[in-house]
Length: 301
Image (tube, rainbow, N blue to C red):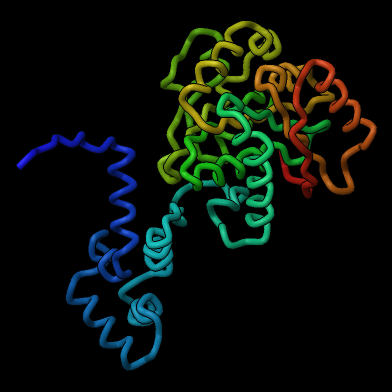
């Protein structure tokens, strides 16, 4: 009899196996495993379910043994989707996390699919994409944040960088405190610990803007930012970069040139077409690939 030594699975492979096993469990077993129900209560719910004709989760809620959040969390696990509870602290704007069944989230999934085909799957080195717009208030931060959530839901190692060091918003949307971020990394006062894993959303990390510096353009135009993006490409499959308004600051063009590509955001009934056209032309002239454009309703920035 021959023997063979098989290598132990990596942590990522173990997590996939564990998640697959959990997905095969009935909802009652999942709730017992998460300590939300006892075996006795599972049987009580099953008995009630036979009499009422309701689904297991509906029965548990009707009996007061489960909450709607409990049921949604178990269903998300069964279908392999991260569940964001009502106590996550994530901003309501993150519809891809808080309201994944919404029409807005579905429109964003269509955009994600197009970006996968046009950029992220065309070359493994093309991991970075700047999200830009001509003016303020057109929804760059909203689009960048929700796309980051959606890519992470595919299991892609995703990093969202808030490179808007003028009026940063991503730290607020993801409920992060602290002043460490991109500005402190580029000034040599912080390292990789400035990147935060988003606990509620596996596979998603955020590098916030950090303390607002007096010289954002100089930090971004220096060699440090280019080296940072190059280093991050080897770790993350998807890198999305939030930017300031392109017609107000030179930062957006610099960021897009380092990323190599840009997604243009326009806002319905608000964006100036001539300004939008000029921004796109300026970026193409310095070698930035314009991957596409998305029409958005106004969002606060």
